[in-house]
Amino acid sequence: MEVQMDPLFLAWSYFRRRKFQLCSNICSKILEESPYDQAAWSLKTRALTEMVYIDELEVDQEGIAEMTLDESSIAQVARPGTSLRLPGTSHAGGPTPAIRPMTQSGRPITGFVRPSTQSGRPGTMEQAIRTPRTAHTARPVTSASGRFVRLGTASMLTNPEGPFINLSRLNLAKYAQKPNVSRSLFEYIFHHENDVKNALDLAAMATENAQFKDWWWKVQLGKCYYRLGLYRESEKQFRSALNHQEVVDTYLYLAMVYRRLDQPVTALNLFKQGLDHFPGEVTLLTGIARIHEEMNNITSATEYYKDVLKQDNTHVEAIACIGSNYFYTDQPEIALRFYRRLLQMGVYNCQLYNNLGLCCFYAQQYDMTLSSFERALALVANDVEQADVWYNIGHVAVGIGDLTLAYQCFKLALAFNNDHAEAYNNLAVLELRKGRVEQSKAFLQTAASLAPHMYEPHFNYSTLSEKIGDLQSSYTAGLKSEDAFPEHVDTQQILKHLRQHFAVL
Image 1 (cartoon, rainbow, N blue to C red):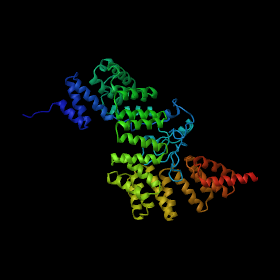
Image 2 (spheres, helix red, strand yellow):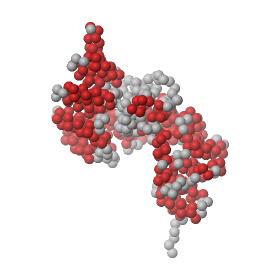
Image 3 (cartoon, rainbow, N blue to C red):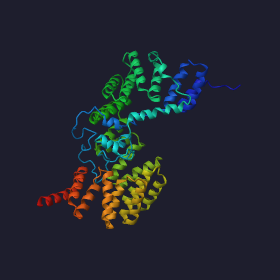
C-alpha cells in the first residue's frame, strides 16, 4: 500500500521550495473539498502573493506625476549638500563633467543602474513631457501610480478564472481580529491586488485590535500611507514601529520616506542610527553609499562601498561602483581587477564586457580590447546597448588614430540609436577635420538639443562659430557651456575674449 503525503504538508513543502504555482494548485484542491479550511486558504494567499511580490525598497521610483505635482517641498533654495533635487549641491572634490559623464539631473553616471539613477527631476512640466522617457537616461519615467496598476495586472495571470478573493464581499473587521489569517490576507490585498484602500482599512483595524502595540502592523500602515503619497503620516507610523521593535526593514522604509521628502542628511543619520543597532548590516551601508553617490560625494560613497565588501565580498553593486570610480579617477588597471572579479562571479552581460574593453584600452592591454568589445556586441540585448558599444569602439579608434574607423563606428552608433548625443558631437569634430563646416554645425546643434546638460557640444559650437566669425552664436553657445560646466577653463577663456571684443565695438 502506497503511503500518500498529507496534501497540506506537501503544499507547505512546495511553498518553502518556492514552487508557488504547485503550492497554489494543491491548496485549491483542498479548498474544493473543504472550503472553510483556514490553513489552506491562508497558505494559498501567501503563495499567490509571493508569485507577484516585488521588493518596494529596491524598485522605488519617482514618476512624472510624483515629481511635478509634489507638494511636500521644504525649501526652494536648499543649502549645498542637503538636497538630492539640486544638481549644484556637489561636495568639493566631486568629479567634474570633464572627467565623468553626467546625467541630465547633474550627477555623475553611477556604476550600477538602479531605479533612482534612471530618473531625474525635470525642471518644468514641459521639460518632463518633451524629453523621451527611456531607462538609459536620467529622465523621468512614467508615473509610479500607473506602474503599480500595471503590476497589479499580474494577479490576473495567476488566476485565469478570476480573483481568488472577492474583496468587496469580505468582512475586514472579522479578519482583523484573527492575527494569523489577517497578516497573509493583508499581504495578498496589498501586493497581489494592489488595493491600497482595503489594505489600509485592514491594517488600521488590526492595529487597533493589537492595542497599538504590534510593530508589524504599524510598518504596514506606513507602507500604505507611503503608497498613497502621505509621507508625513508614513513617517509617524515607521517611527512608532521603531519604538516598539528595532528592525532593519523599518529603517530602510523610513529612509525611503526621507529621500522622497528630499532630506538626505536625515536619511544618512537614520542609517547610522540603524548601524548602531545592527553593526555591519549590508543594506544599511549600501543605503548610505547610494545617498553619498547621489549627492555627488563620490569619495565617501566609495569608502562605504568598501565597507559593504568587507561584510559581503560578492556584492555586485559595490564592486561595480568601486570599479567605475577607479576608472574615472584614472586608475583603469585597478578598475579592471574589479570588473574581472564580477566576471569570475558569473556576471555575464554586454555592459560588463563593454567596461572591460574600455579598461583594457586605457590600461594599454590592446590585445584584450577588441575581443572584449566583440563579446559585448555578441551579448547586446537592444539597440541602445548596441549603439553604446559602437560609440566606445569609435572612441578607441580615435585613440589609436584610425579616424576612418572612428567615423564608421559613430555612424553605426547613430544607426542603432538616433538620439546618441555623444556620437553626434564626436562626428561633428571629425566632419570639421574634413572641412565640412555646415555638416559639423548641424551635428553640434543636434547634440546640444538632445543633451542640453552636456557642455561639450555647446563648447565645440562656440569654438566653431568664433572661427567662422559668427560671434553672437559663439557667445550664446559659450554661456550654455558655462551653465553646464561652470569650472571649464577653455569656456571661460572664449567668453572673456568675446566680452573684450564686444567692449571694443
